[in-house]
Image (cartoon, rainbow, N blue to C red):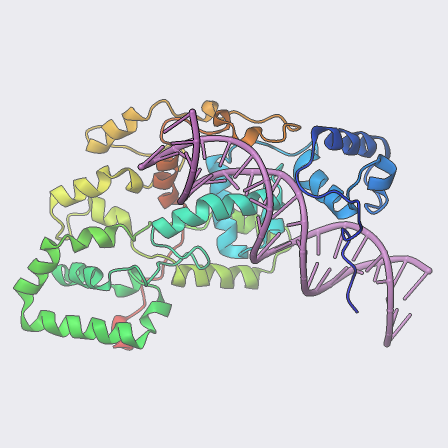
Length: 345
DNA sequence: AACTAAGACAACCGCCAACAG
DNA sequence: GCTGTTGGCGGTTGTCTTAGT
């Protein structure tokens, strides 16, 4: 069988579109509406294939496309939908008015994906990455505080299924039993607990996106399974426990250090308005970035071919850090507490 | 100032499903 | 039912810009 490529004919131009080409395409579609894309370039006087014209129109020239940086709400929506739908960019784009699947895909690959990786999360499963996760640090924290030993809350079940890791965990646990104080102390002295901290995110309830998807005809079974999978595989520890509870054995200074790291901002019920204790050291950091605001987001004219690269389209004042810190509040999954470590050991 | 690397985004490629003849 | 066409989708590449040295 095999289908002939739509752009294999000689004389058809490829590469970036010029303003003149954009104008021709827009003028033609405004007059005739997009119909048969194969005939459009010929009728519009373009040396392009129909597919190229369609992509240019749908991804860039369409008047209802929203340009400019993604808002926090949009980013949150993307991440949550991605946790449910996976790489179904068109499905995700359908729930973000004015955004194209291509734009969302690019944004995911260039921003969110890297951010997740830096946070130690697998961008595919949204679960902690075991290849960089310091298991011993997790165990050390567990050992220093028995109530902390809900390993299911620290690791996804898939990681617990790894026999090598289980052996390691068993070995460390037995070591601890034999020589509790020095072992725990050593782990703490080596700042391993901080490593653990850097791999935690706070679980939260799935938001109304789930209901929306249900109303729009998505199978409740599929969505439920997806959410359950995300809950089980997702990162599982409750950061607020570390930051606020007196039950754990983390020194106060450690808590402060943790909270004050911009990358680990307090998780707020409203991700756009972080809850920042007035007296915390983080407050000063936050204040130092006060020049950030949503109003600083400047949209880009639709027809402009390159201005997205313009600095004006980016949030000033450490936006990347802001995003990264706020991002921690986006992975919102309720984790069952019932997983018993003993079943795996 | 020149060069290089990394980042960001637009565009392309190939596959697939739906549809029409 | 078969075949070709079309549009849609996700993955990947190409190109331009920016940052760093």
